[in-house]
Image (cartoon, rainbow, N blue to C red; front, top):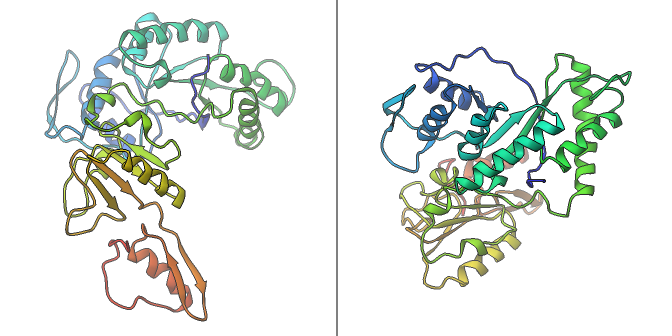
Length: 361
């Protein structure tokens, strides 16, 4: 079975950071500080560790982080959302861990043996369904070692040999993350430049069109949906659709001067996406509608409570149309600091003073 995850690639980064009862909060902070894309928890206390991390990142519920368990205890810890979505991964093959992955984790990390993947996927999927989750929420990750040159087994030989070894893992077993563990620069370079792009193309050719395009939200997200909004009918072509349970919601829910709790945020990066967002809003005549560029408006009209927000902050292109007449096209999502930086090479300046973080729109 393929779970619809676009491929990710990486290098294994060993770490000697401890994860004992007194150090978990520090480790979570370091994961955000270092910009890591993955957080791996140890087996013995994994269930409680995941619960602690979720609580520390849960900025949607106000107040300090609190948790009481056998191994970990939070008695009022400061919460902070990571800068981007950091999946929680569990590494292992025993049945207890596989059930834990299905119930709580974002990713299962294992070896690349076909039998292990088949049996493990079955256990993870069953546990996920039993917990009310969609198995597609859970990524499957393998770590590989190998080299180029003589063909002596799996992940050896030419780049084409590597692709042939990896292709079944993705297409037949749903692997979405492949991590190369190597200290050899040439192997890492060959993997990145010769194997990864060819593998992506081969997977796209074998799987149905758009196989990795559909986003599967965590099962906890629908519980925070607001009444009166057709979430399933949200425009699929938007740059981003943010719901109240999504990680990005805490950052996008409010404007610069006013707090808000909209029911859905439609982020547009093109004129066509704005058109789609407006069409969606027209299908909800009784739902509040707000428009936002940079969210600095004093009136607070860039957000609302329970309604729709069309966010054009991604439409921030600045284009010089005519140097002679000094005509410039500025996107509604641009900020004045960006405009000033774009004009500086031409020796031009803004006509009046303004704060750099204020949006043009």
